[in-house]
Length: 315
Image (cartoon, rainbow, N blue to C red; front, side, top):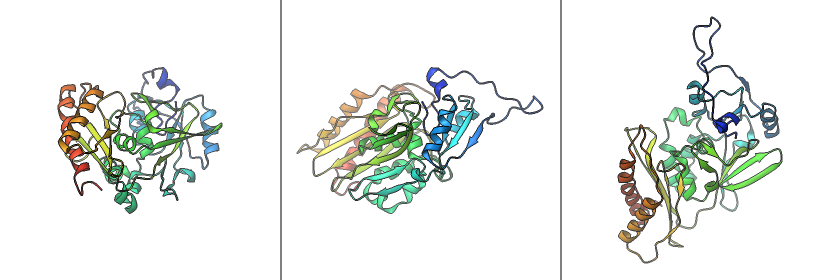
């Protein structure tokens, strides 16, 4: 599988081998990133030919904020990096006549954050993007790359799941659209076929008055990976509350919609907490224990639901 962050080449699916750090010319000092070819195609067909000609050992470079870390850590050993930043078709960031927001695979997070119309209509999307890394890294990191890395802790996943986003994938056979909820199949594994390139996210037009938000708990002040995260939307016109959570199962989770109706805020909060607790399957790792995640996530869920349901809450 080839993702936009290049983290899932053919060997990663079969279980990557341990890569011996390559030696420099004198045979003593290891090269920081190893040896690989670098190509910067200008069209999707050109990128497709590069992928097809390298037996599944090519890695697609969009932002590279995950990929280069994994190459340096010897977790991945591509023979070629295919940099898609130069493909104009992947630089799209606009809203069509139907109100659908398109986010190209090569659009940096800071472009999303700085777009006034997105900040106004989809504040939860901006909140999630702002929580990732630092300003400098967000000048390269992409939303599509964050998703195709398929980390359970991907910050962009919960809010885009709650917004009902679709992912567009291109291959020499054509283009297909998949619900984002179908993308994640396991830790660092996606449903993309080996020859497919994820090209674009499409976020449906928000319902009138839609409110959205994102919260995450992390170990440090500032920027850090999520210990747990939750995103949600509330549409006053339909009375539906949609929640998605991250870093508490092998994949980001989209929950079934909750009908708010005439229920009190306390009742809705309790429904949301019960739904999250039933779905989550946390693990203990270097960032937090499973018990800590079980204790913290309900607190974040209550805070988010209270804000979304509050009159004048997240617009």
